[in-house]
Length: 508
Image (cartoon, rainbow, N blue to C red; front, top):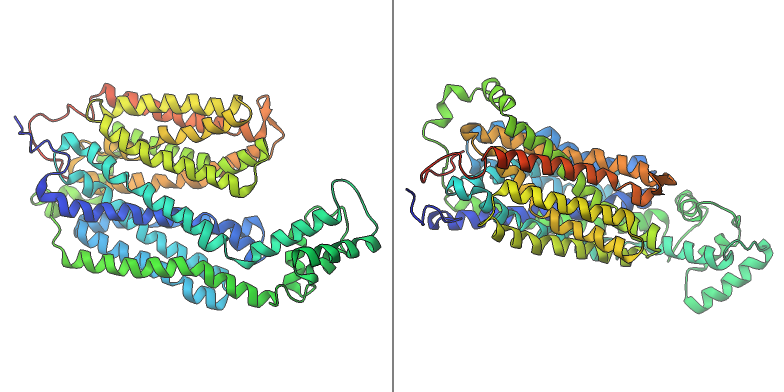
């Protein structure tokens, strides 16, 4: 019979290592959310199309897909600590590449830097998740991972705040966009068409009142009133020299200034990562591997992969994780579009609703971690998945603010899902958990595929009798149903609680 000490979530001997490794969860949360706005920012700064700017997300998720399995092989051959050190080095290297990329105004170099950066994130996530699981009794492993993962949204909130205030709040191209949009709206209100000869005096008067750039006023005065995309046209003409300057800057000067602002957060996080790296190098970290694991002939890659592929619980976990990441990215990405398209809310206000969703996600994770003391992880996962289905249906069928609040409430249900699926999938795999972790990190590519599918639905006029925006959320409904089924399966097979008797630790 195990003692109460054995059953603690984090045993005292692991407390300091647990805190250090938990700090990594916030670091990759920051990277995940500070990068999202760059898709739109790069589109305007470099004056490229949506397909080209989407390489930012492709590089980000591609880095996870490329490095997850090599990272697992590395930590299995060496150690968790070395895996963390390599991850921090790659993360910092990718972050610092933003400096020459900004100086050279090179979009491809920025994308390459993000690709290398996510090599580091793949190493950190593939290492940190099973390492946290191993720091104590198997019976409390899922609660321990939920506790560590609770600090991930803290980094996410900081990332969104930095993206909104430091990047989007300061880049000049946003001012240019706002001026063009405002001038065009004032020159051509509603469907009303005015003669070009009458437009320029109106804009000159507005320029005196609002102190905007007169070069833009003169440019808008010459545009066609019925132009579909005045902002995009103006950006291209600014780049081509049709608009000679804006706020005293040529396009090249403004571009370099904006890119310097974009690179600043990455430079700062790079130096923070160096400090964290030195800390991990100094502190002695526990080796939680099973005795003789590194020399065990059964750790051969092919044999390990074969065992994992035969493990229905593990395969179900990878599938559930793929659908979860897709659902999370869809819900958070399209809160803004939902608020804009369905309620006519401006982008700034819509983004505050996204911050609210993240705040709810953070607080709910701590609450759900407490409930895991009394409910099995599989049972709680299923219950929250069905609650998420109900909230998502509310966002689809309820109009106005109730629909938006239902969409925000999904975050409370999602808070438990990633670490719980992770813990359930790796429960019982023993020494195969290091490679098994790679499959669960590889599942993050679900976030690259499903949002694109939802974007296609949003572009449709109607989906199953409702607007394209609301109907697109049938995709997250499907995802949450898949997750609920996995939670039921894991609970039925007693994966989370009753696999081992006694006080053995969760060794991976």
